[in-house]
Length: 311
Image (tube, rainbow, N blue to C red):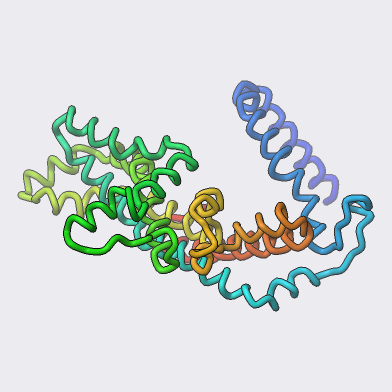
């Protein structure tokens, strides 16, 4: 029995090596990506153990004292724990409510027939994505300036007092989420446009013959055709529920809006790089990543019931 299993294993290995030899060019093209992930994504994971240690640079990672879950308990017991969770989830849930906008934009662009107007519309929606985060944050601050900002100038024109948006905690989530949507709107629509390009034109022709209106064709043909793409992107967004790019928040953050702008990522940056609490900040970051991972698994399992999932 063991001999039979061993011979099957050897045959399988020989078959796999034969496939590699036949398709070696493809594996060669794949090699840089594999090396990148091994060096910069997987290899640094050994440093996660400092989340469970009282890390001292002079002792190194392996020489530092093991203290278990002390840093995690410290974070859970801190008075700002629930504020960080509330702000992080609040911004992400707010952004998730705007998820359908890029779908609507993609469907609208797909229906345009004037080539020149369509290209102009696509350029206008795509352009903000290519502006650097620093420049984009500077534009937001300039637009919302209470004295010279274009938004406050318009508010004064219609007879209201100017609003100091950047120092009001109540406005921060709205400013961040909508500016983020503005910057990534066109780029998010590209994926849906690519999916719409694969819709069989004969389906639309048959629907026209049957008397279907344009809205009916969008609802009954286009949307079901891109539904798997929508589900996959929604799962990926849910997997980032506890993650926010800290660069933009850090650029828009100030002492007056801290009640709404302090999220887990900015807190990790502050505790780790500014205050040198490397073990503590690693523990907070690890907690955040684990929660993201669990949310991703949960929603992937929920989506699997519809027949579409990541795995």
